[in-house]
Length: 203
Ligand SMILES: N[C@@H](CCC(=O)N[C@@H](CS)C(=O)NCC(=O)O)C(=O)O
Image 1: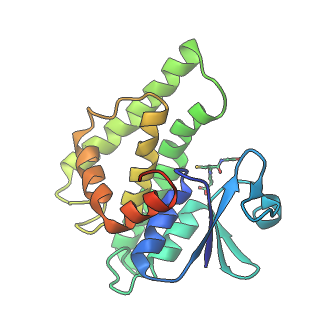
Image 2 (image 1 turned 180 degrees about the horizontal axis):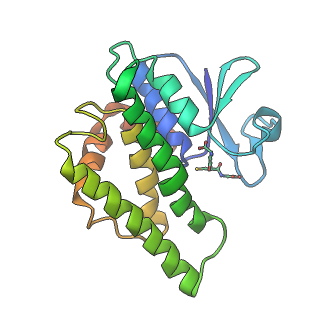
Image 3 (image 1 turned 180 degrees about the vertical axis):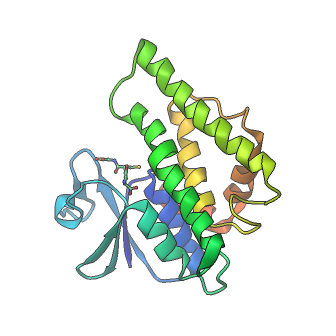
């Protein structure tokens, strides 16, 4: 398998799960401004949508979209801890992935679409805070160690990656203690440390 990624982008979640499932994989960095890969390919030939992540499963077989890639990878976990194979547990993972992708990811993405000023900027921060408040409250009301049950899974990886962007948009994540409790556990995982190091995000 090969993951097309950009350092620190949402593709980091797939990178983390690849490290968790113990498969051989390659990485190819994509320059999202020029849409060239580090090997000189035109990225639009690989993913016509132009964004990361893209997962090459076999030569010529490409899977895109976080909500498809993350469960696809997680189900390769030999211990079956990352995602339940069926039933409500799996549906709950997909529910979180859908919400993170269509709501939280989008709310942060507004900051990366171009410079935000004045009212538009404060509205964008408010939206991020509104969603984080909901997520934090939901976690506080559950007795789980992670977003779904007591096992780390793809939704936790995705939440970790998206909330990492708070730093680059100048957003204060400290009020969200339940999110931060999950973030702290995720950050300690070897899969996460290795992925962040391999993307050049930490030394
Ligand atoms: N719907 C896509 C969105 C992916 C996405 O937004 N990727 C961002 C990085 S986090 C990207 O590559 N942006 C550059 C671009 O759109 O050109 C998914 O969930 O996989």
